[in-house]
Image (tube, rainbow over all chains, first blue to last red; front, side, top):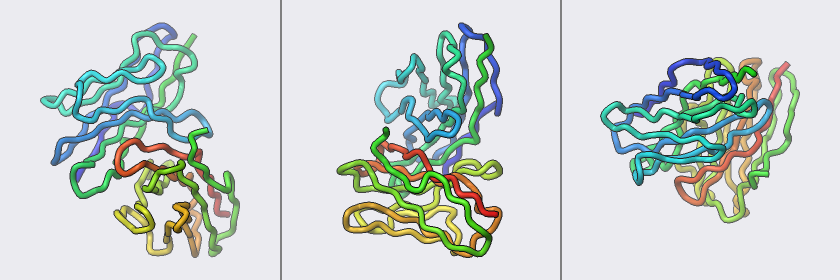
Length: 116
Length: 111
């Protein structure tokens, strides 16, 4: 079974500050990991994904995440927050190499608030 | 526009009723996934179809069913609706594994 834990349901930062959203996963097989963003009243948009290539993954809108197997973590960072980054962020894991045929298990989400 | 089309966008219905949610995947994508998003349960995987066949089942209630048609569009049928079924229902598609694209969802309100 797989699981994802996002540490902190709410994170608040000032505009221009570092954004760090934490995600830890549990998987019995090598995982594929994803970060999605959801703006109010919208669907989920893929920010970035890790699929066993480079451990540092760059995504859209200046976000990046680093896969650390020893820490079972996949934290999302952005050097400088922008007001438009305010949204809910979801970390997800898939064991596409196993029997789940690629279904995603999501964390509970982290709401990012950006203050002027 | 993600390329995954879900209709309707909003649905309000009474308890005990039955509704059908529709999803058209991105052109060429064979896999369709259904997810439910609610405040108390978060994002939960319901079911997956691949090229017309059921591939994986998650926390889908017996009152819920789905199918994927030959043209690859999918429908999620929810029956004997309860207040607790109120949620956002998302469809996602992928060519055959990774690379999910989500639709904008159907917001179901059961009154």
